[in-house]
Length: 472
Image (tube, rainbow, N blue to C red):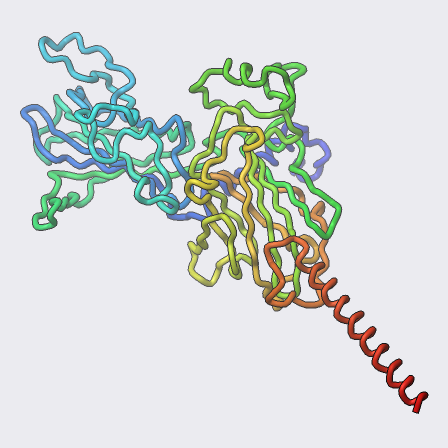
């Protein structure tokens, strides 16, 4: 009871821990993709004298979360003394102790092997279908044709029938780092395979599945993106909250960030290593690898328009196939999108349609490159107002939640949102150019010119009429 009677005695550490867990408490369950997971399927396709040959398929059944560079790695523990004789489309990171074998030496003798994907330049005789992408796997919702990765392995010192085969345990998936929790392998119905001509069906001898789910809390100890907001109709620009993803600490910890104007910037970045994927961010107040800016550009009577800018502050990463998840109550009325792909996310049925998935157009803006003049992408949304339940007043023009590549971004506090007026006279006529930011002002100027012209014409007409009567 003393805890409730003396709240003032809570120390700073307790408060920080409470805030930390409040922020991450919802991240173990993804409300926008409740059924998303990565499923690892083992298909035993043939038996060998001392074991079996299996094809392992990694299916990314997530709507928007990719497996990014440096790619996935998969680890498990053998039940007894199994070994891997050979592999196609992948390799283990270590061979282990194979000294008891004479003649043919296994590919791997470790009790707990770690498997990684091969690179795209791997010789064809070492590949199988859907392998050799450097471990990069796109999400099923954005790019289903590239949401699969496969490899083949020949297992020895193992069972040779459905009754004697021993299923591996303790699966761990790094994609590329921690964040995924894998359940135990479960035997399922054998997978069926169609021949290329579709006239014959074969099936696996045995199949088991392993399901892995994601938690941002497990993936990293701090956020990776933040959101800033502004509007054409208000001078206030609300930046990302200070220290959203960490704080500048170059005084006591040199190298925690790099100043954009620092001399010899390219050499400093390259010194950290070509294949170093640990974020090296540009020095900012928020210290996030990625920043998203939401700017309201137009506010008509029936429509409003938003420009979104995504900026890369991470010198160690080019974000290919990036995506953005935005939650806003008016996203069920998107009228048109400009320079962006869009689809609605409705995991709970069409009754709730307030979330949009946005991603770049191929060969146009689907690659977010390193910081610099080209280190950002921009696109726009045109939305129709539902006046029965929408007002842009009191911060409603800004999103409730934003994800970048599946990670929840830090939002500014709602009390800091710039206020907008929802009172607009009328929608511009159809011939006004909606692509121009000053379309509304152009229309008002045109209307004023028309009124002035009519007034001058009427004045000239009555003046001439009076003059004619006077002469008469």
